[in-house]
Picture 1 (cartoon, protein in one colour):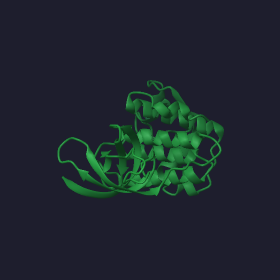
Picture 2 (cartoon, protein in one colour):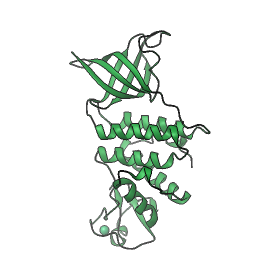
Picture 3 (cartoon, rainbow, N blue to C red):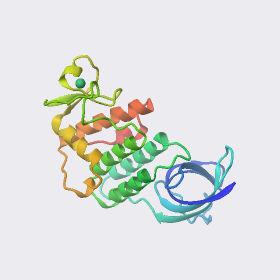
Picture 4 (cartoon, rainbow, N blue to C red):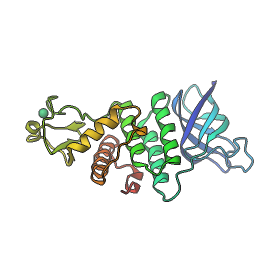
Length: 248
Ligand SMILES: [Zn+2]
């Protein structure tokens, strides 16, 4: 057993007993970890109401050497998730992000860049009306971190140039779009226009894209949502629970 110190975001909460909870964190230094928070449900617990979905905290926990739950000993609130007011979209996007982190990352497999992206996304969801771009950027980042980012630059069939076309066929199974030649012999159920592919290239390669001016048309938003939701469902083997709440 060892004492570990890090910063983390709460991605799942479950009751454990009358007074305790199991808190799943996505931490900067250790990746995902599930900790038992004893007494977390008592009004005056030692965690000072830091335990809240998507809250960011500085934490100390005792890491169990084999199996079993880690034990949370300290949680100091850094940021409580307060979605941008107006409608519920920002809240649902937050829940969706928590669901993806829980489903797509492994315990004790750190991804510091993904952690920073999570904090940045939460910040955007609190401060900005536009939740589409931060959401898409986050999805592309997590796909890249787990080695599942679709190919938007070259053909997923022959690795050649995509060539000019109004729209391309996207195949989640093969993780990319096809050139004209490959398209004839392939399957895929998502059509993506050329403009949308350029936007996806930009969003997946440029680090500072969220601070740039980039307006997505409604058609582009719809195409990207369809493409990413098909991709996530393919990887998870089921549709994410929160996916149907991401209305456009
Ligand atoms: Zn091809």
